[in-house]
Image (cartoon, rainbow, N blue to C red; front, side):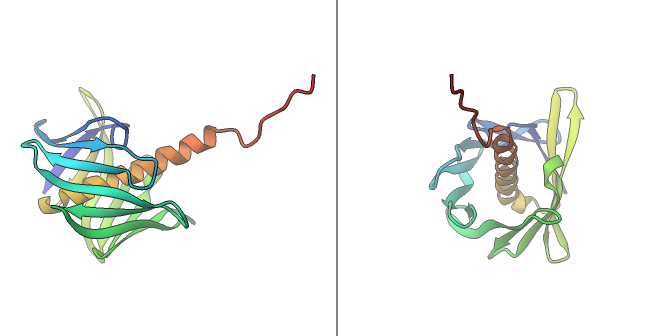
Length: 171
């Protein structure tokens, strides 16, 4: 079983994000950006090899993301519904994502098998997301999925701050 740590609120930002293991060693580097169709985040091993990436493919009828591992498309992720809670599905992999997305406490499953559990932790160096992934070979795709969920969450929260209408002064 492997745990991966990502500093809180750095997961889907337009910045370099370092993913560390439980001993604090840097394992992956995520770079890229979100916002428009065709944007992507790429996950590199620390030796410089691209291990996975996720690409935004659709803005109409809900945003979709294509997941790639070692340059091979392995799935497409999209939000299915959001009542009473968010539910995401990754086609091809047959993975579901359920839980408290807003508080970063959720799980990814393949039928009854847990693929990943996301939680939060406070360490001496700050607040972190903890990704508990039983099979280490699933880590690159799980990290990419977590980045998409983080993006959707903070985009949704950002949209709530935007006023729906503007007051026009008629002086």
